Amino acid sequence: MVLVTDSDASIRDSVPAGPGDPLFSIVIPTFNRVDLLQQALDSVFSQRFVSYEVVIVDDGSTDSTPAFLRTLEPSVTVLTQSNNGPGAARNLGAGKARGAYLALLDSDDIWFPWTLDTYARILRESGNPVMLAGRPRRFDGVARGGLPEQTKAQWIRFDDYLSSGDHWRWYGVSSFVISRSRFLQAGGFAPEFRVGEDADLALRLGVESGFVQVIAPATFGYREHKDNMSGEPRACFDAAAKLVRAESVGAYPGGASRCRERRRIIARHVRPAAIAAAREGMIGGGLALYATTFVWQLAAGAWRFVLGYPLLAAFCALAPARRAAT
Image (cartoon, rainbow, N blue to C red; front, side):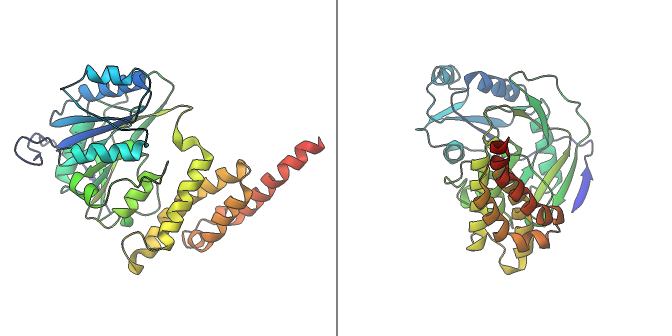
């Protein structure tokens, strides 16, 4: 792990994928949120770094999104599919993209004017890693709000994702900048995930050379609102269970020598999912997830979870009876 602060060198000599190809392919899936999509695109078109293309995939929208997208052609590439979910939409966009790197952006999030500038600089100065994770600035509601401060770029470089430890290193798909060739070789996002497809992909790319976490500045605005899929306890529980099953059958790379690292990372995803499951009354499922990963949690040193979860599950199981008694 190496913490790096940027120099004053220019980033304009970043090398694109090929003659005439952009450095970045910005892939944006969207479904029935035309107003938020317009804000996302405004933030893209305000970028200072201009070696990029935009690929928008409409995931079967039934609002005014298709009409709006027609006004953007041919400046952007517009693709459509039936409603198959954002993972499938991103895969479709990546297959049609031309850039060396995919810069993923959800249609309810935004970038800042320096976002691609920062990514290009860090990619070049960190030796073109396979994956980079941007830094979020959370905000509420429909309005974008004011811009955060643009601070000097700082980042941490790891040999690969598995070596990055069990801290949160990325914050949703809008964090991701990924080598397009490696993304395609890995098969893209797994369509069986409603949420958690980002965690699954990061693990499947876990031993690829080079993973960078941006420490500063904030590179994207993560919009918190009622329609965030990450706020659905059932979906998060199902995603965590799929990660555990995939690890149990050896679906992730690294073999026995990297087993401990993989399971520390997965255990981190399990903890909030199991807690949310208990609070939503999914007691049996939460306890099963707890039991399956018990040894992993011990190895990760998650003592508060190990000792406290059975008490939480018991409290949540008894809550309906207590309410009925009153």
